[in-house]
Amino acid sequence: MDKAHKFRNTLERYIHYRGIDIVLHLKDGKVIELDKNRQMENDIVIGNLADGVVRIPIADISKADFFAA
Image (cartoon, rainbow, N blue to C red; front, top):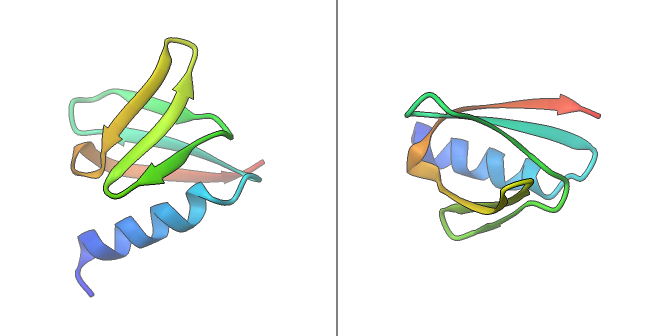
């Protein structure tokens, strides 16, 4: 299993755990904290932010931090 596939599987698993906070670090330098109503469709992470719904391709994510809430 390659690194990208392992990252996708781990991210998808934690997206479904509501007790975990997720902070995504994007390749363009942005940092996005996902709310609890996040989901994943194919290779797109969907989150509801104050600015509205955000759709983030996995290819744009450089790393993710997971915190127990």
